[in-house]
Length: 352
Ligand code: RAM
Image (cartoon, rainbow, N blue to C red; front, side):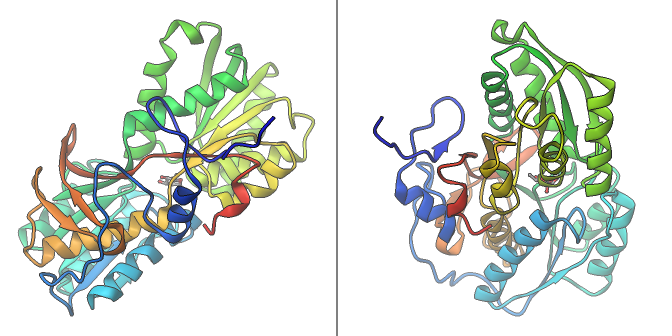
């Protein structure tokens, strides 16, 4: 069979990706029909401002890559980035970082919410002081703009599509999530459940959702627990890079390797070994560095008064080009691009 480019955009409506799309994703800036890519000098952006990046936690490698992408953008603009958060994925651990941003006169906050509502008192206080508040990765109910990594429904649906195909649409499966309050995880799971209502999946059963808190030890423990509790388990979806890499680590050294299907959202750098050894066939993600980079330009655009964060407004995000804000269920948002499917043929080609 003729070898075809195996790097595919996920879910319905996506075209088979070209080699140029891989190169673009590696270098930053996945191709997208919804925006035009042009070099930008961002004349309207103010320099010398300080932006707080508050990830879900400071240890998660996905968040570290996203924050580094944000730093690249802010450095190009002439702004300063401060990364501050706790080491566990809780709203309480993020609140002191918001307070510090307010007290030190930051111009902007970019935050991945560990809870949609619990952070609102602090974030509202920040916005009342004129601080630009951008959410990325995981939204909150209080912000100027959300930078979404990809269409929320498409992420949830495509996870189930991949799992269903690999499970031959039969058997029990579990979800290994992150923290139970994470806005992004819960939104994706909602769309997984909607996808599961289709007749195609009538012989598949979601037995339980486990919450590994984006903690490797908890996620390993959950994987062990679900395999013991459900001896007929045939599949696992883990829509978190910490969860899927921990589950893969467990499966790879167990009798379940190659028997229990595992898919979800993972970093190719963490997942390559498990794809190469046959533990995992396919998983998805986007370029987390681009996510942080886009958030960096977005917060700078709001803090500079170039945009206010309303639907219909556009701004240029450096090498990624021009983005237009859209209206979505939770308020105005920007969508970075489409999720991509990684497999044995392409997983070694990425630098994140
Ligand atoms: C984890 C985090 C993050 C999620 C990615 C895919 O690192 O939970 O929120 O978006 O995985």
